[in-house]
Image (cartoon, rainbow over all chains, first blue to last red):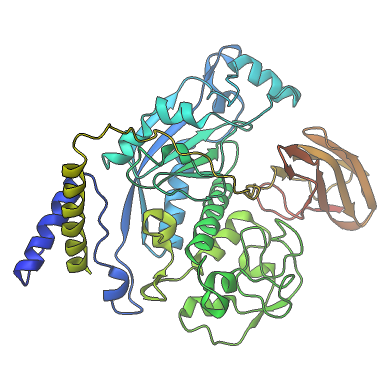
Length: 341
Length: 146
């Protein structure tokens, strides 16, 4: 408890402390307003439960699925993702895996179906026979891994699910009080029991860190759009940030996950067309008055998915200060949706 | 801000206390365990692109053609364009396409894959093209025939 200046402050500290003991979320007295503009925000650490569905495949010498099919190592992928996020957030985002669960089975689908390992491996080799509907049963996941209790106790801030292609996960989905769209319909069934919002990420160990950053990017897009939902016109800096040349000819800024400043279609990160863009002005946020410069795919990795996404994330505002009630550090909302009002 | 919070909490405690005092004999109501799903239509989730990789090519070479191996998730058609022309093939996984090579020519390959469109509920996925000029290691797809 910090030193108080008056009896009322002392009383308010006491109330705050005891509310937190009871599990009630009380926001810190907004760092947003009191910190000087333009400083580096205090880094945050978020606790992660890593849940890996990696069943043993009997017909492949009892190897786990990722090894049987020569796919990636989820631990290495997670480590690369953590390192990337720390670096591209300028040290602000620090994920810590505090729980690791490797599960020798397939997650249950929404209709109750569950793959058997040999059947799935055979379907993969034939590239046919995958179950539809594909969607996974999130109620079953919430219950099996006791997710809400872990969130409520403060043990876990978010969950990272890792599995195989066609696992049926959303790339990100939000639960908790008043959950909102996070590149997936919110888990409204958690709204009553969960005391704070949380995100469940869904990753695929067949793919790479670039695809993991894309999943995180779609989460960022959803959360920032919602954060700025009540801001109109020029005050809606998110709508300005995502401009690209196809939608705003000559007025491109940074773009979206799928659309770099010069993209003409989804995933068009290797486009060599040169367009003017004010993408670098975001590195001087909140001063966005600089002139545009001519850019092409050489600026963001020549079509490399990871390169483009790192470039995009580095341009998210990441300093202290606020305007219109929204922090200049957009990362804080993306990693903690409880701060979104 | 914190002071305001304290005042609000005190006020709420008084109001809630009064409410419970006044309704002490009222029938107990049970809070619903679940919240009804709103009828708001949601957008379609954004998806990452399908896996699209090209194995490294051999260069330089004396051969008149070279097999190029391409993997495309949910692929429908693969096309390879170079100085020698265009070859296409159904995107079985992986697809091996034979690229003819002109003598004493450097071939710059552009590999394009068309992803099959599929429906998931009301959402359409696929139906787009992916294109690359590099192999899965990031090296350019260039074949020089002697």
